[in-house]
Length: 359
Image (tube, rainbow, N blue to C red):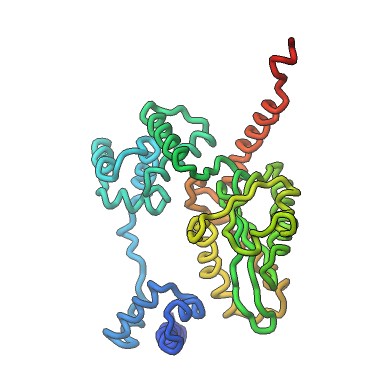
């Protein structure tokens, strides 16, 4: 790294600290500068201890590759999580040691977290997905664990996602007020099974734009794949909820025969799948895009967003519980037969003649 670029990195970090002081808000400063809150407090601590020299040192730091777990050990831990989903991290560590694989209980948990398997229910969901996609034969332990989880979910009335198109999440994200363009809102749709994501930008937040997103982007895409979209989960924002007889979004869902589920009142984190994606696109696309160039229209920005989304869906592997390290589009393609089989089963049941018809 040459001196000029190194000084520029340090200047950005000092600028973040000063901006937070001016705005009297760490969150706002981080959003403007494109840093996380964790980074802010790390920079602050180093700056208070060593001044700009401390920030210079952190900019040179390189990852310690020797501390990373061997890929074969990680693969063994993930495989064992599906083999015995009910086992805790200490027991998994002990059982793997019997097989000649040495990893601590803490190491097991770190791998679980990295692969979205840290909770028993997540390991069960991953096992269910593996069974559906690969048709593996379950052991008695796996069957007992799945049965127990199914009973608990039924008791608590949890929403499940069984295949692509079973449940989509939709949310509105305020991108910002961009000079020369104005306010920009992003309509986001995510298929909860495959994590395939579609977005469209608007200059307002309204029921009509929420419905247009489905009509222009989402349903045509699902139609191309030969998969029906059955249900959508949204928060209780005014663009998604209102009088069913006059609300454009509600009317559109009725017209397309799509069920509408809403997040629990005062609990927006139940639509956390969209929240996490919004953080990703903000950090990885918007934060750098608005520093690279000035946009003159929403259409110009939309073209670059579309390129980023294509890469997100087609090239970037996802750690979602049904993805198993595949890209969203690979997951969708590998499992869309589940949606078609389900639709066929329902069609057979619907048209099956009743016993009375034969008498």
